[in-house]
Amino acid sequence: MAWTDLIVLIMVVLVLIGAGAALFLKNLLAAAVATALVSLGVSVFFVILRAPDVALTEAAVGAGLSGLLLALAAKRLGLWRIEIQQDSEDAGDSSC
Amino acid sequence: MSEFALLTLLIGALGLIALGIGGLVLSRNLFRIVLALSLAEAGANLLLVLVGFRRDAVAPIIESGQALTAIMVDPIPQAMVLTAIVIGVGVQALALSLAIRAYAAYGTLDMSVMRRRMEADIDAAAGAQPATSLHAPAGGRPLPPISAPRLAHDKGAQA
Image (cartoon, each protein chain N blue to C red):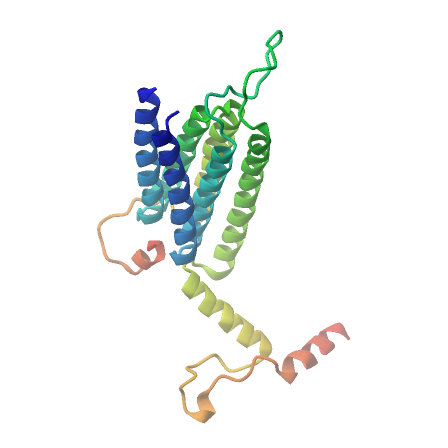
């Protein structure tokens, strides 16, 4: 089944790019969204690996609930700010 | 599922674990450490399900009237991973709440700044001088953290 190979290849590349984005994005809210998207991609792998129940849980809990948790915590931590291009002292606060 | 797809999935799982552990160790922002922990956890879950996979097998779900002779993938790692996902969200919630409390206490998420302020707090509580460089001249070196004033203060507080 060549289409499975193609889907797996594309999704692995996308998930690894998403993981890199979660680690290297300056905006921490965007990094949290990238983490939720990685969870969503992993749930696709679970479907391909014949584990539909795990995929269901991962999509609902790993992507949905965990993303909500991260977003609310980011709001509490004051990370919901639009970063204008300036080199102020709080740029070091969001560095990797 | 060909050999190529399984190998690609293995690379993906190991890459997720490597990126997660690397971010866990190397990042200074507390929020990003939580994100890296979540990434490593997703990679470990994927690796576990991948170990239980069997070629040309069906999902381990028995429908009514189905013959039980069909080859199934191993359901045990799947059940364990199902538990691990939920536990992972619990761990993440705990870590985020600790990060929120630490941010409220120290006003920063940067681990190096937070550690400096925490050590200053401990020094102040112990009655020691604020930490200076270890290479300062003999009079200006930081005192050892154990000190008599703190014990006396604790006894005074209890009495």
